[in-house]
Each structure stands twice: as structure tokens, then as C-alpha cells.
Amino acid sequence: MTTGPLLAVRDLRVLIGGRHILHGVDLDVARHGVTALLGRNGAGKTTTVRGVLGLVPRTGSVRLDGEETVSLPTHTVVRLGIGYAPEDRGIFAGLTVAENLRLAERRGADGPAYGLVHELFPELKRRERQLAGTLSGGQQQMVAIGRTLLNGNRLIIADEPTKGLAPKVVTEVAQVLERAAEAVPVLLVEQNLAVVRRLAEHCAVLADGRTAHQGPAAELLGDAETARRLLGVGHGPVTRASSVEADS
Image 1 (cartoon, rainbow, N blue to C red):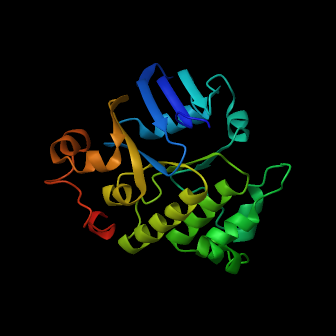
Image 2 (image 1 turned 120 degrees about the vertical axis):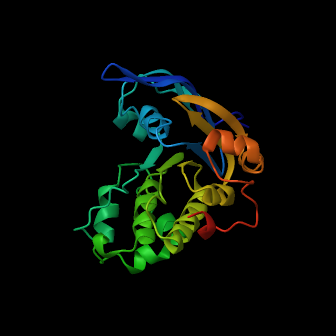
């Protein structure tokens, strides 16, 4: 049985335009469930994701299931099994749901996994002829996550999936991610701590381009002093009684 993290990042450093953005990030992503990547604005979360994917120049070590990827181009990293749902979702508004999914297809021995996508998100099947630009924010996130599930990926990275959404839609997106994580492990970049509390078993916190904390998510969110110091949250812990809407 394979042990250890699915994704192991060590001493990840990113230099852009002569400016050091990441100064040595360490990150472990579990082989199941949701691992949350947290931090204040500007801490380096999105740059870390882009570094993992090879979208920015990076040094250090990025191992996917034990295989070193830090020297590989982005298209090769993606083909190794990482699906990416970017912060802006990357939806083509003028195309239908079906066309948006079709664009994400990659050649593989088993073909695209439409059965899995439609099992998890039956609404996408019902709305396959609808223009993606007319979908709600939650439905668009289904399309974004659905695309990552088509190709047998071993890991999904979801970057700020609830950013800018109304509380009701945040709840819908949390449900989308919850269903996706039953099929594929998720690395979730997220600011909404109630969403993190609901979904994540593990977490890492960045501060100033470095890893400031790693451990169980419930442990961090239950420690008011540590959460306030690392994340700048308000008074008291994020409790189990809190709703997703309450923290939106």
C-alpha cells in the first residue's frame, strides 16, 4: 500500500521579475479528501499553485505520487494527473455546457469520464445545451470542477472557488467540492473558513511566501489564538456550529 502524501512540495521558491514571491514553501496534500491552503491576501497561495503546475519559474521539489515534476513543463504536469480549476473558473460564456466540457477532453485509454461527471453533477447533463454564461455561479463551478474530473486526474486544485459569491451560492459550491472530493483528492485554496471547516481534513498556512503551519484543519480552526495570528480572523474559534453562510 502506498503511503505518504499524494503531492509533496519542498522548499518551493519562485522569483518573478527579480522579486522573490515564494521563499521556501513546504506542502503536503493528502491522498484522500480535501487539503486546504490558507493564508492572508498576498501570502503566496496562488503563486504556490502556479508553481506546482509549472506556470511560473520555480525551484525546489514538487513530487506527485513520488515522481519529481519541478523541471517539467505545464502540459506534462497536467498529463501526469493534475486538474486545475482557476480562480476565475475559466468558463467560456458563449459556449454550451457540453462544449465547455468537450474542450477539456484529453486522449486516454478509457476516454473522458462523462459517467462520473454526470453522476456527481446530474445538473450538467440536464443543462448540457445551455450557454455557460447564463449559469449561476454555483453551476459554473460545477462546470469548472467537472472538467477536472473528465480525464482520470489524480489531484484537483481549486483556487478560490467561493470568492465573490453570494452566501447561498457559496453553499452550492461547497457541496460541489464535497462531491468531487469523494472521487479525487482536492487541494483547496480558500479564504472562507466555514467552507474549510466543512470540507478540509488537513491544511497548510502560508505567510510572506513561506509555510507557517501544517496540520489538521479542525485543530487550527479550533485554536482561536493561532487562527487569529496566522489568518487574521475575528474573535473566537471557527466552531462546528458555524454555517457556511455565516462566514461568507
